[in-house]
Length: 116
Image (tube, rainbow, N blue to C red; front, side):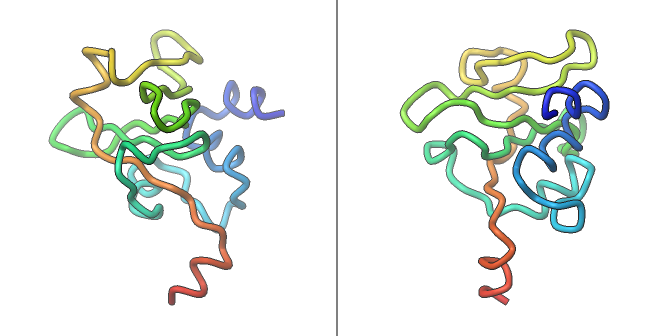
């Protein structure tokens, strides 16, 4: 099911569903998703966290899902417009590393409500 979502709808929808979030709790676009998550230090990124990238003018335009554990090179699964679904090592990538803008964790709805 998750692979079908990624193939059919791209990384925005895939991250929304694979995170366990429902449609009302996580926006569809990468830019809106980045504004909706709790920012965390890169070193604390773990499987399931989201990584956000900008391409031009610091506008968030791409999101990936972390597939590495803390202490490992930061690695993501994402949908590339030119290469399809792929796993990329962000730390070793001359393309992705300079474009990395933030790492975020999706909080369960109960945690969000408790903070408000």
